[in-house]
Structures are given as structure tokens and as C-alpha cells.
Amino acid sequence: MSTGIAMPYDQRPKNLNLASIRLPVPALVSILHRASGALIFLLLPVLLWALQQSTEAGGYAGLVNMMDSAWIKLPLLVLIWAFIHHFLAGIRHLTLDMRFGLEIRQARRSSKLVLVAGLLLTLLTGIWLW
Amino acid sequence: MVNLPPRAVAGAKHHGSYEWLLQRFTAAIMAIYTLGMISLLMIRQPDGYSEWVAITDNNTWRFGTLLTLLSLFVHAWQGVLDILNDYIKPLALRKALKLATLLALVWYAVWSVLILWKL
Image (cartoon, rainbow over all chains, first blue to last red; front, side, top):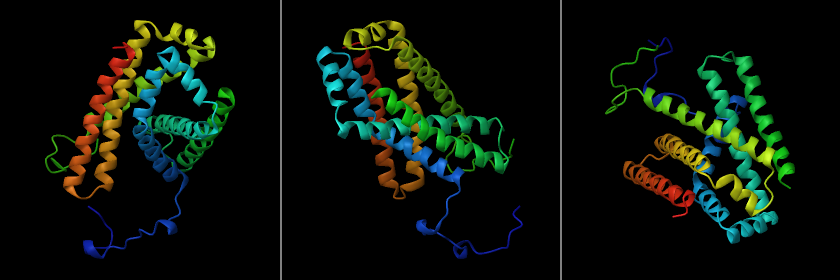
């Protein structure tokens, strides 16, 4: 049973001004986990198409050609970030499931680690690819 | 375990523990495949089409990739359902988007087989 102040359901305070909400880092990592997942889902047909292209000599050469363009590199780097962030945030989720790092200080620290490591690994992948 | 009231969500057959497990199981398959594939690419450093074919033209790679792609589609189904349930309020629209998502994912699964076996 809740011990909070009884308040009619429709009179509870709401704060849906997104600009005024200061998101804690764990919440930021969480919403980016969702956003990156949505992005990967929306790009699935493009990724499958690319896989299909890579199985033919001509298509493979076409993909290699495309990778030279900055207009492809930048969106690709965003997609790579989405994948890495989703991966790391997912691993963090699994550790939380196993009840590691549930204390607020540890949870904050691990979320910062996910955020920074995601950006760093994206940078390294970019350097590795080009 | 937390004691939940029976059928906390109207029409729910259970409390989502099956979905919870499936989401993590499919994630584990994808994580293993990803790490394996990255290691393979780092070791072999394929340069050009023929070296890419050398990696991908065998049934071990095909079945591993298919298993991972199917895991991805199941994982995405749960994730998209969560997003639609959270943000799309009109029931008819939500149902239509769920159906569209399901059809797309089933098509991706068929397409994956066609791609991997060059059918």
C-alpha cells in the first residue's frame, strides 16, 4: 500500500515540459537505448539490402564505392554508434538483472561508462574503417 | 519474487516473464555472434570480394548468421511493441502499426534465407 498523500488521480502534478526535465545520466542512457534500437529497426531493410549486395562481385564493388562518400560515412557512423550503444547498454541491463550495480552511485557510474565507451568505440571503429 | 495481482494487465496471460527471458536470450545470441564476427574480421582482415566470399561461402557462417538475424527480428518485435504501447495512443493506429511491424519482420526472415542461400 502506498503511504503517499492521497490525491485524486486527475489532480496529480504533471511535468511534461521536456525542456525543463533534467535527465539523469542513467535515464539518458536508457532513452538512447530505446532510440538506438528504433533506429536499427528502421534501417533493417537497408542493412539486409547491403548484405545482399555484398554476395555479388558487382554489388560488393558498389558498396565499397559508396563507402568513399562522406554522405554515406556519416550516417554509417551514426548507425555504428547506435549498434555499439545498444550493445553496451544491453550488457549493463544484464548486469542490473543479475543485481550488480543497483546502488545509485554504481548505477550512475556504469551509465556514464556506457555513454563514454559507446562514443569512444564509435570513434575507434571509424578510424579502423577509414 | 514480487507478488503481482492475477492478470495485472487486462487480457494478459502472464506477467511478461517469458518476453523478458526471450529478449535476453536473443540478445545473448546476437552478442556472441557480434564478438565472433568482429574477431574473425580482425584476424582475417578481408580485403576485396574474393576474401569476403572465403569467409561467407560456407554453411557454418550461413546458419550462424541466420540464427542471429532471426534472434534480431524476435528481439526487435518485442522492442517495437514496447515503443508502440508507450507512445501510440489511438488503438486502431497502434494495432495497424503492430501488424505492419509483424509483416515486415516476417518478410525480413524470408528475405534473409533468400540472401544467405542466394535463392
